[in-house]
Amino acid sequence: MAPLALAITVSYEIKWMYFFFSILELAAGMLSNGFIVLVNVWDLVRRRQLSKSDLVLLSTGTSRIFLQALLFLESVHLTHYQVMRDPLNSKYKTVILFWMLANQTSFWLATWLSILYCAKIARVSHPFLLWLKGWLLMAFPQLLLGSLIVPWISVIPCMWKHFSFFYSNSAVSFSSNFTEKSLEERFNFSYFYLLCNLGNILPFLIFLASSTLLIISLGRHLKTMSAQATGSGDPSLEAHIIALRSLISFLFLYVIGFVAALAAVPLTLVFSSKIGVMICVGLMAATPSMHSVILILGNSKLKKVLKNILRWVQSFLKDRSLKVLWEEQDSMCTLDRLSCPLQPLEISM
Image: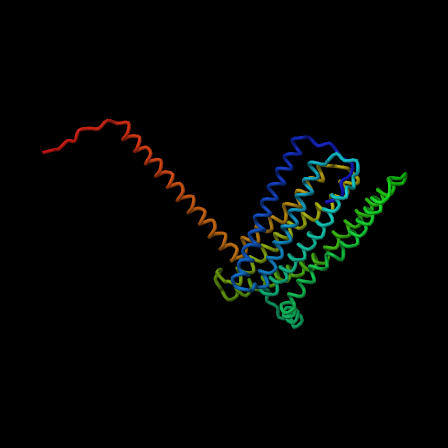
């Protein structure tokens, strides 16, 4: 997501194919994240409390709903407003700024989910790691709240610069040096854009540390199992594998989204490639929805609810098809009785 540079003509077919793909991404993201939010909200209303992992999943699903909506708004801008005099449209920049905020928040939440997996599953013996594990579990609500505030620290300077520039230009008429101001604003906006993306380095390093510790714990656990000739149905082993599957998939998807976000800057400012920017935005919109689906399939509670819903839908469709079949057979019998003459009753002696 970068400010739109000089408009490059895109064919009608490519534009609407991209817009249709953006709608599919929005639908997938809203359905998967909406499912995560609804299940946990219902659990919160019913039980009056949520576990730490469910609280993180609820926060992650909520932030990603806003993230998908903002990326769809950018897709709408790219498809319907590709020919513009001003490459730094204020509405478009506002969408990008809030996207940076939602993206950082979503990544911090995914990082805390990996830390929670590591603290609950990883087997550690070092005194410092044991103390750190206990402290993280005890201070987890405060750390989670703090991670929701941290993204504002990196985005607020960019918002201040953006809205102050917009106000100063709306208060005065166009002058001869407006082009120079526009170029300066584009440079500042690109600088803050890169700065906000580089702000993900800290949670990324924490994510790598927790994932590495979980992998080491899995290796030690596998050695213990092989030494004791334990069967493959060990619950601890299954927990390790499910957590690692979620973390590795998120790492792979995050790298794709991070590279796409960084590549959008030169594609826009240097190469002025409209199609390249569209591809980057499409990749950034696909990664959070795909990871949400993986989270659903890896969470026992969410997976159970999903199976019950699919079972109910299958039963409903089956009952409906049987009802339609019976109605068709009944109508056929009725037509046969009306069309055929009465036959004499034969009595065999």
